[in-house]
Image (cartoon, rainbow, N blue to C red; front, side, top):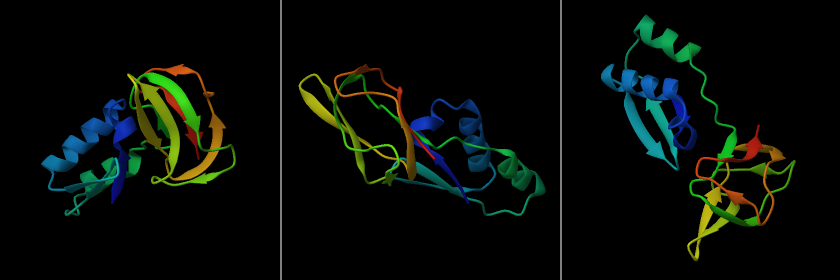
Length: 126
């Protein structure tokens, strides 16, 4: 089984091509909390080598919208999960929650009050 984070997959052309290849080759694709799980139903050597050689970066917490950082609810060294509300971004008088990624926070790249762009890396998780 392969998992691909949809927040970063849109920026990773190789991940998109891998998803298309797997879909055409008979894999099952399930989406759960911004992570796509691909279940392979074939023993094809070509398919297995494609999966083993593909690495997808899933360690960044990415902004889904442009706006201003209102809250940071994580710290360096914290263990986070996909259900944790890591950041709150304010835009157009609305607040948007940015959820964490599974792992340990290694670096936070923004501060409260910073303006961020869509798809900007907010924190590095390992």
